[in-house]
Length: 287
Image (cartoon, rainbow, N blue to C red; front, side, top):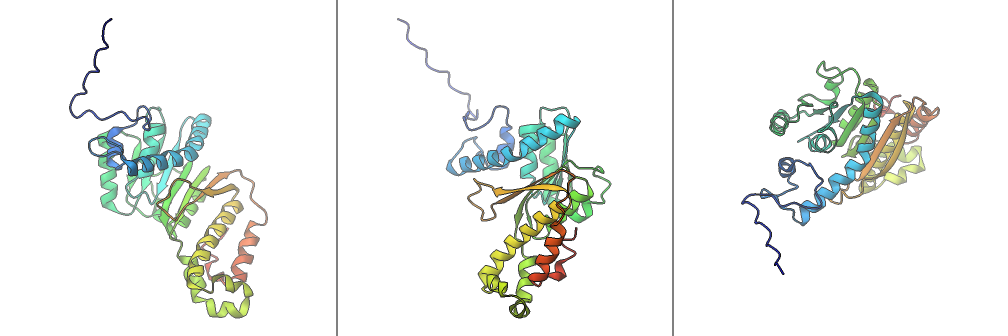
């Protein structure tokens, strides 16, 4: 009986094939994102990162597919893009093999924008574009189309998330996907007005202690953002971004434009701001 031949040895430098990596994924991109080591290996930490990538992708991919199926095209703006981690993953997993669809990365740090441009050229991702402007400035930029289908802001710090929401309103975005971060503005105003709030409402006990001020301010910020989205005709889902264990900022807000505003959303915002002595933030959460 003939003996089985030994498997042929892989040429030196050939990256290992990992069952966790999806067929067709860019190995070079995974290395750039430090999901794969430089020699193409996966360690325990990189396996966790890859799991996180796929988990986030499963929320966004159906939204992209819906827009592309209905319109034949797709535009996505990623605000506070940083190294454009999210944009590159979405392009690689979803848009790379499709004939249409463009991702715009918006970031204020020019060196990161330049790095992303170079990486997109090296990977052959021609429908990725990068702007070194603020979120607010991007709303009026001629480098972006008049309408954007999907707006994302992953860990855009403090009020940059609110600017991304305003951008979505201005661009008639069909979907908004947010993972808020560092919501300091509301907590700061709660802290400044704390003494006056004690005489105004017993609810001030909720944020009397400094730790509670920070935590309550963060939760309140996101609740007001959801009401603002609902007032503009979005159906809002709030869930945990399970899998991002390394971050305490684990809230995922997904908004779908339905064109049916929640009738009392604006009234609820005004009532909350008044009750909690936050009326000076009225313009931030205006409907």
